[in-house]
Length: 319
Length: 243
Image (cartoon, rainbow over all chains, first blue to last red; front, top):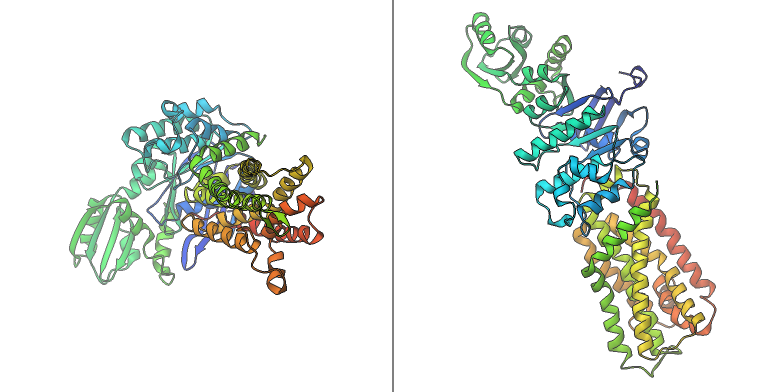
């Protein structure tokens, strides 16, 4: 993907890579997000979500690749005040009240939201006059959200924003985020909860081991990763043949065992037994997100397993 | 966009941290009363001891005031606040200006308290002499204020206390703050004269004579500042990693 091919995009990432020593946190990802989209970056811990967000915000310098935010570099977009963010970790500074802190941050932006409006939208009005060091974890998280919102940014990046919130807090948080999205703003959030991604994003970008392994409408991704896996001992079957079975998305090999990630495990099981009657030790699992990720990314941390990658990439492209 | 609001709240939160403020200001004040009241009529290096020691304790108090700003920076970093500020349009110059301003306001408070203490112990200076002492102290503090920023961005929050304590003590000891000078001639004296803290302490003596530091003093302060400013900018720039 070329930056020039996506005029007017909110975010364009091209061939973006970042390594920390031997760990390849982000591996040449390409992504284009249109203004007004709400996109979930879904993936397990270590998928590269935070590194990607940090690079988009200009906090981490990519090893290679390009980032364009509304046609600007991250540094320029941040300086212009068009980007707001809530980082994964972080607390607040002391010796100020909530209102003072939000006012302080608002003063840095060219077109901020009203402080009262930001506090109200994030449910922080009730403790606006409390010192920042006398807040509960959930209250702190709301204030951090208020700090991101008061920027009134065109692009809002939220890195696992609901991690410290209880059920009620989450509900209110997403209601606020929806109203921001409804104003035509672009919202990108990282999460490792499929339910959250499905419920609040138009589009899910699935990341694992530094790569984008799937990208599409939320319902479609949910069907793919919310399916089941079949595990069987089957030493001699080819992965390409297994992948071709009805209802199977990907096939992986772990020694003598094969693991099939399925959209329809019933059809896949019938097909498997019909085609490979020698299959034994068969187990069917309702795959958790973690397992689905592992299946989807099938050993691709070993670059010599080109075969697996190829099967998987082909599947993803012809999906 | 104006930075006035940002500066105001930055100062406010620094001065609401009264434990920090009191601990920074109390030590030189207590030391001044304890030592200078016993030696009210003594002379030291050709200066009345209360005057010399007032400048010396002002050196300690103001150095501690500006360097310890590094501890606040380190705490901000540990809280992830520095990273949060990096994704706002806050300019590096505004950020550094705010840090310098807070350190200097604490330093001015330290000077005011020591001037009051000196007056109580019979120090009498003309308006011009007061202006010279305070002016020289404020100029001589520049390298230490910058050093505080360097420490805050390079050293973790759990190590700033020994770093600040050690650096202040070392500069004070060598600069002659504690009422004695390790050397008055020879290579050690040349080293001492190359330290900005020596010239801070000399502010009291210089003020009595009138005029300012000799050229050597200005050069020492300028060289330390020129060496530390790029280091502070570099430390601030590269400090974007997760704490």
